[in-house]
Length: 114
Image (cartoon, rainbow, N blue to C red; front, side, top):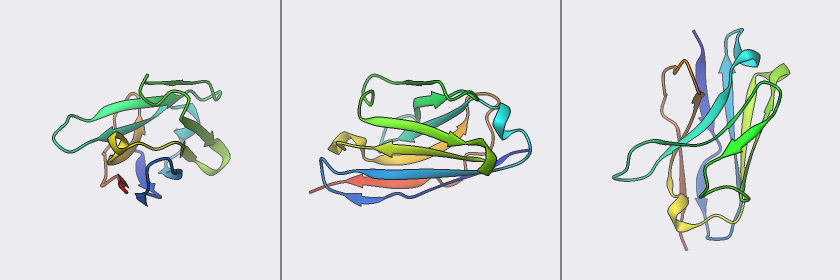
């Protein structure tokens, strides 16, 4: 079983930056394709990007060029660098494997507001 804890959220102005972290427990992290997900108010949870064990990444169109996912397998951590934040980026952000899906946990709130 893998436990995942996302952190680093907060309040930021439009155009600002924020870095989220995801700490994983368990021995299989470095073999997992890991993703960042978000759920905006009134919307379904969506995956915004993922990173393969070798570091290759892909992003959903709305965040491509603004968000960067990285990972440190030795520390069992994943990161989401968010730049040029927009009001529409306001959401609860979660980390999880692309598959299998583990417990979502509480996520971390990101609020973009002036």
